[in-house]
Length: 309
Image (cartoon, rainbow, N blue to C red):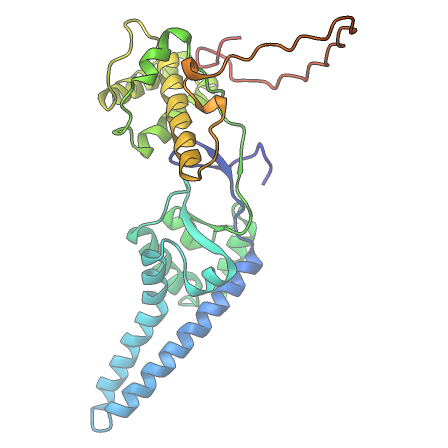
């Protein structure tokens, strides 16, 4: 995935480049799961044969059918739900199922994927045609999605490819808002609202001004409802949303640094605690240093949600 291409946005509002799992790794993972299912079904059939010597053959056949459905559909559903998106095959290949927004899947996602796999793909009611259709869908999808992924709103990621941060939104806090931001209580600002705010701020430059105003005001009221104290009177909505996101990210990075016992960088400190850096003085008689070339400035969002120059 390209560094500036589409990515996932975590609950903290950080865009991540995560590689979707390829068709080959998913087929191998499915083969491992198929072996596990075949062994489990074989063991169950042996147990049925051992305890059903005098039972009715129709009843034994019904039990075998129920067990087959439970193994073929129940195993992937239960495994992905309980292990947050991993079966034994996916764990062996370093794969994980997540939601389209990068969050962990729930029971509903696992249920839809499991039933779609049993009925439409693995093996499907019209195997091998349904299996071929699932492979074709996966290979032609931009994010390697099979039919079950499209129905459930999920994607399979390769966890062994290291995530990389993508084009972070310029984080800035105007000087008049810095005391307010440092005193903010953000513990009620959940990941969902932070993600919605981050997505809006990132895409606001492509929206019309009336749409910016309507969505921005709605998010402003939702953010103010879960934060305290209120901002200074007359704070514009773009400055408020950008400042809250910047402070939330700073606190998250500070918590990670403290947990890892790493030294805190000046950028992670509050503004009034940062050390003042004095420019170095050249020794007497030394020639003045040559000016360094200025790197090109990448384009930034335009409109009221862009940071000031």
